Amino acid sequence: MFSSIFKNRILPSEGARNLFIVILAITVFYIIAFRGILFNSDHVYQNWDNGIPPFSIQLKHLADISKSTWWSSIDMGTPGVWTGMTRYFDLVILNGLSFLDGKLLAKWLYLFYALIGGIGFWLICRILGWGLYTTLVVVLISQFNPKTYSMVISGHWFSQGFVYMLIPWLLF
Image 1 (tube, rainbow, N blue to C red):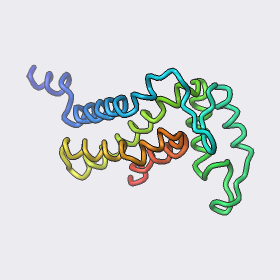
Image 2 (cartoon, one colour; image 1 turned 90 degrees about the vertical axis):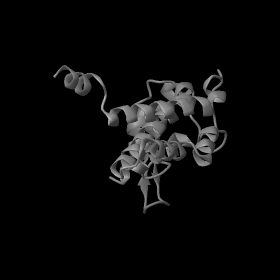
Image 3 (tube, rainbow, N blue to C red; image 1 turned 90 degrees about the horizontal axis):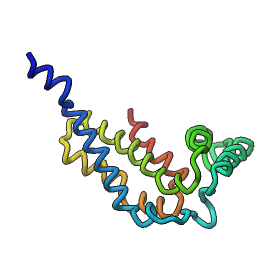
Image 4 (cartoon, one colour; image 1 turned 135 degrees about the vertical axis):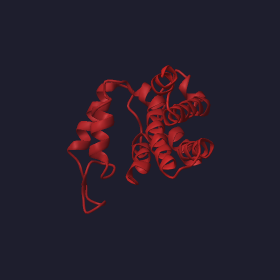
């Protein structure tokens, strides 16, 4: 009786343990892959078409500007200056996280993206019945590949990374 209580209540289930391992692996890979920018005191900034303002009030202003613009060349017109995802990006990232400064977001926001996207891929692998090692390979390749690395380094992950993290969740 006590062993079943201990096993079911105190020891995590295999799914929870595997999820913890996946989250830990994503976090460790993120810190290793982006250590050059994470522990640098400078602000990450992309210089011509996309960038993260360094101050929280500037993030809020960027969201306010995006609400009142119209881009006619995509999807027969869309609010916002980037894509049709702008209203969700504005709501979650620019408005939702505007209390944080841009320096913090520029360095750590992709970890949030990688965790959400990685958990989505973990769920897909779990539904397919794949084991932990195969799942780890899928999750880590999906979140740490040349495309995602170049997006983070160049600053393009700020809005594109938001959409990229939603990809596995769109399959549900």
